[in-house]
Image (cartoon, rainbow, N blue to C red; front, top):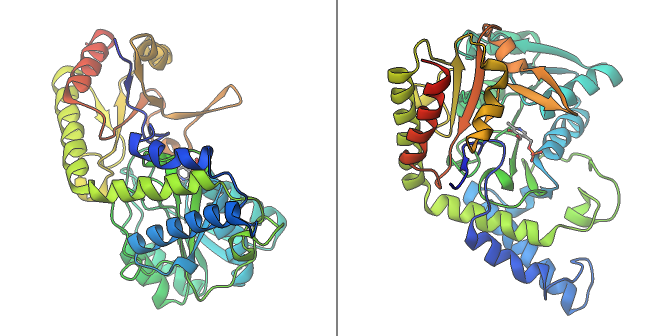
Length: 377
Ligand code: PLP
C-alpha cells in the first residue's frame, strides 16, 4: 500500500513541473550569479525572472522581494532588522505564533530594551482586534507581528483589517504568511502589510528557499552580512535552483488555486463529517469548521482520553499514515504544543493534525477514519 501523506503543513511534495524547471539549474546552468561571464549571467537572469514572477503575483515591485534560505530566516529578519530600522521598542504579537516569530521576539526582549504585549486568544484561537486597537493607542508606532494562517490549528487572521488598524496608528505590520502563500491570493496593494514571508516547501516547491517582502519605503539592515547579493540585503551565494523552483511552484499554485481549494476544502469537510459519525467524543481545535476563518488545508483533531493516545502517531505510522501531533518534537524531546496550551486545550485529550494537499483523495480520508475507528470506538 502507498503511504498516505496528511502532513502537508509540515512540508509538501515537490510538483513534477517544479523539478523539471529546477533541473537545468542543478546541471548545466551552474554559474555563480555574481560572476560576470555567461555562466553567471545565465543564473543571474534566472533569479531576476523568478523575482519578477513572485512580485507580479503579489502585486508589488520586484525590488521589494528578497530571497532567503527559509521562512524562519525571513521572519527573523523582519522582526529583528525591522524593529531596529524602524525604531520600534514595543512589539505586539500573540502566543500562538510560530516559534520563528516567538523566539525572535524573545531574543529582542533579552538583548534590547524591547517590551512585548501578547494579544489574548479565545478558546477557538481567535484574537480580538479591539484589543489590538486599544494596545496600539497605548503604544503607537509599535511593531505588530500576527500570522495569517496558524500552522497547528488552522485559524486565519483577517490580515487586511489588521494592516488597516496598524496603519491608522502608524504602527508597522509583519505577517507570517507561510501557511497561506500559494494557497490564498495576497494582493499587497490591498493588504497594507510592511513585511510578509513565504517558504517554497509549503506549496510544492523545494526546501531551503523562502522570501521576505519588505515594503519599498523601508530600509532595513541585512540579516546575513557578507557579499552584495540580494542588493546588499543578504550575503551568500544564491540558491539558484531553489529560487527558480519557488517561482515555478508559486505560479502553478496560482494557476490551479480555485480548483485545488475546492478539492482540498471538500476533503476537509468530508473528514470532519466522517470523524463526527464514527469517533465518539471527537472535537476539533481552533475554528476548523468555519471556512472563512480556518485554513482549508489544516484539520486539528482533538481525541478523547484513551490508553492509545500516547502511541497514536506511532500507530498511524504503522498503518502507513503520516500526520503530526499537537506537540513539537525538538531534539528527540516531546514538548506540549504552545498553541494548544495558549487556547486552553484539555491536557487529557490528544491532538492529531491532518493537513492536506491537492494530491490527497477521499479514499485516503476513508482509510484514515477506518484506522482511527480501531482505536476510538
Ligand atoms: N511560520 C509558519 C507558520 C510555519 O508553519 C513554518 C514552518 O512550519 C515556518 C514559519 C518556518 O518555515 P521554514 O520551514 O521555511 O523555516
